[in-house]
Image: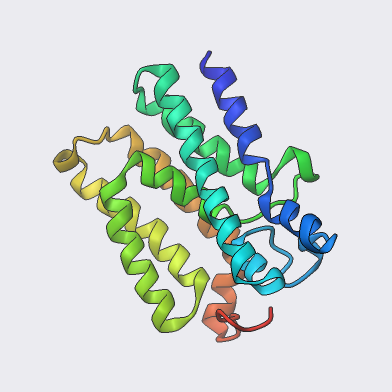
Length: 200
């Protein structure tokens, strides 16, 4: 059963709402416009605020649903729940329904972490939002969220009664996010990264 729910989570993650929104509203492939990324930030650039918010919420929901399915089927096993969350993020990044060309998995990861480790994710998310407001770099905020949630969970898991096994999945998700943002990191260091409101 665990194998099937993990595969199901990957398939859920493979639903690219930014791609579908682009097709629905403008009959375009959003991966051929803006930054070329199939995610909420590029949806904002290409389609506007309303569609971007919808995509953000739906992408987050993919992560939430995957983890909840894992928890329900396994009676709360953090390994199965974490594996389902990771599978959903992998599906978003490499969606089988869209030629394995997806996004960077940030919104889906937000859903996963908010379900697995709510309080560390909330604290790190608040810091990330403040950084985005100040710097207007979404990529920087995304990385701060990932790293911050992982560090906070690892250092306080005993306070919130989280399984330390969850930390391993957070480390994997953080490393995956850093790798997916490697070009953003390079541009941040060079001072050429696009800010919110700018064209890619």
